[in-house]
Amino acid sequence: MQAIENMTPAQFDERLKGARLLPFVIECYGNQCASCAVMERLLTQMMAASELSTPVFKLNVDEHPEFAKRFGVRGLPTLIGVKADASTTSLLAMPNRSVVGQFFRSLCA
Image 1: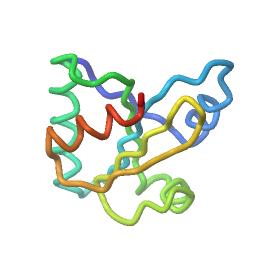
Image 2: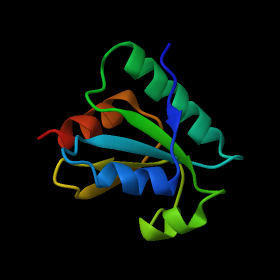
Image 3: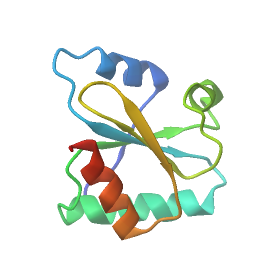
Image 4: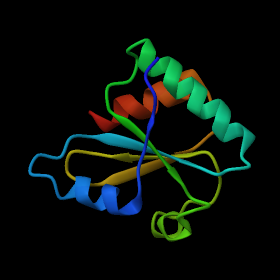
């Protein structure tokens, strides 16, 4: 199974500076968040089944609270989607395959 790579705020900013920005998603999680662990398992399963069309990274907002503040993360798990034009959208949701799939599809629309 594919693993979701960790990302830091600096790596996030560097990725945004890329010459050709491709959509990607950041899973914002916390150390004590049980729903976040469930979300990570769901995302990993969806990646393995080729259901996700964009790369997925994870960022610990307990370790990087400034990132959470920057993007208005108010609860966990939160997915932040970055579109090709560098605009962002977010989803605060319980792990649900249908909702997560729709969120990922919206990034490429």
